[in-house]
Length: 165
Image 1: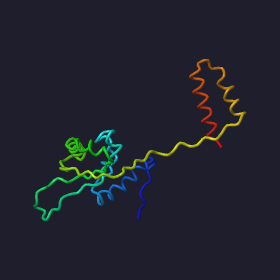
Image 2 (image 1 turned 180 degrees about the vertical axis):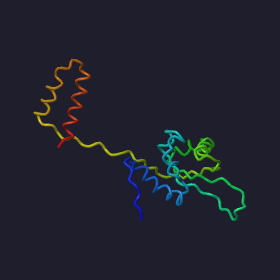
Image 3 (image 1 turned 120 degrees about the horizontal axis):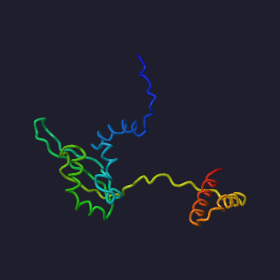
């Protein structure tokens, strides 16, 4: 059994994760990871903060000869944003279908529930600087005439030294 040749080009972790997660999402919820990742471009930032696509429900086909029927997109939405989402369902259906490349969605079902968004890591807490460090920063920026620039550089110095252990 021959080993695959190693590539010297790094591969982003998101590409590796997408290759693993996308088939699971397609099987469980009928949604591709591309739809979830592009949700804010599809519905706009105003609605993207309070909604997310849950799943795509395809109608049952008893025979292969049955005609194609569009699916229902289930969207989780918070509180009052559901009303805004409901008023824009026609446009959202058109945008999702354009994203998918065919008329896959014919209806939207809104489910009200909390929508969590990953806000990113919290900023690190800075340690208190001792007198020597504060005076060193003040001496470093003391020759700068512009008060705004001096204050900005002083804050930068405090954050750099405060993040060090």
